[in-house]
Length: 389
Ligand SMILES: Cc1cc2nc3c(=O)[nH]c(=O)nc-3n(C[C@H](O)[C@H](O)[C@H](O)COP(=O)(O)OP(=O)(O)OC[C@H]3O[C@@H](n4cnc5c(N)ncnc54)[C@H](O)[C@@H]3O)c2cc1C
Image (cartoon, rainbow, N blue to C red):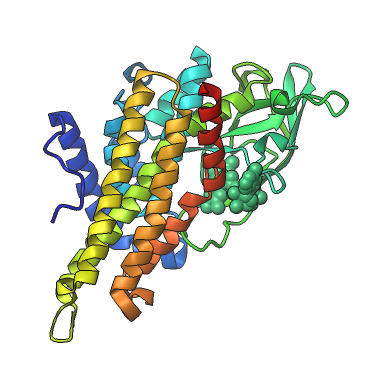
């Protein structure tokens, strides 16, 4: 059944990494995913094991204890994890993409030594907090504030829906460093490296979500949170730019997370259509069913191919925003469409929690929302068209 990653064109190293990720996902993740979903269990032990295998430092340069792999190889591994459980995949994706990219590009050598190396070794789990209750798509409208305190800073404000917000060891937090009397819009935002055991870092209880229920998503209250000068990442006022760079990398991860979800739904659907009989024959013999499966398979391949093409571009140059948005847009809408078809092919059983496709359907939805909604991806894509015209 040709629904997964086609390994024929891969290098030996890529094939080994796909095998490692697939074996790990099928042994340590997928058998437990339904239970974790039901109980909202955040499987930190499993993520720690992934860290020991190098999955939390896949694209981090080797000099900083990472695997120094190209982005396509990283996406190949991430797809296997996402096909087993999207909740685990989102932790792997955010950690590898956003905080890692920020530190690699803008961290001082001391910050890399202190934070990036243990992140790459999987000893520290990281996340990022940009969104706020009143600033999601319009992230530059965020209001959390840092004010100078001698050499250091004091942060106050409210962050919303941070993945790993209650479970990470380290968060990259975007706050304003301009003043209420001289607002500078996006240029008034800076990024701080915040260990989550800092007094004043207060995560809320895990959100009760439609899907990705085993992922920790939490609001964060920043209350008189004191940081040293060394906690500022890069230049003051550049935090929004760093967040957008991180999101370019992050959107490739979310694209492949969506591909993993869609591919697993397709695999379940193909198997079910062989097994399920109606009108005296397996339902796969009905042309309408075959056409549906054919369209599902075609869209999964197309979404994966675009994500990989964007990954190749990312490794060749920095101008990947438009393609990263295209990849995320196509893959997330594919995941929603494919999982909807899978539920349909399972009929009444598809609507039942005892069968796997309803979870995939619920997990797929958020890929159209986080790291920029589909509408925001279309805006990014269209703007890039105008800028070239
Ligand atoms: C499970 C989960 C995990 C998340 N993890 C993180 C995280 O780790 N870190 C983090 O910072 N954030 C995180 N988020 C937040 C996420 O990125 C935001 O929810 C998302 O960016 C959308 O913002 P919003 O929810 O405020 O929606 P809004 O911005 O209020 O949008 C509402 C609707 O309006 C549309 N809309 C808004 N502006 C426009 C426009 N200009 N043109 C057309 N349509 C528009 C949107 O597309 C959407 O359909 C997470 C969210 C979820 C659900």
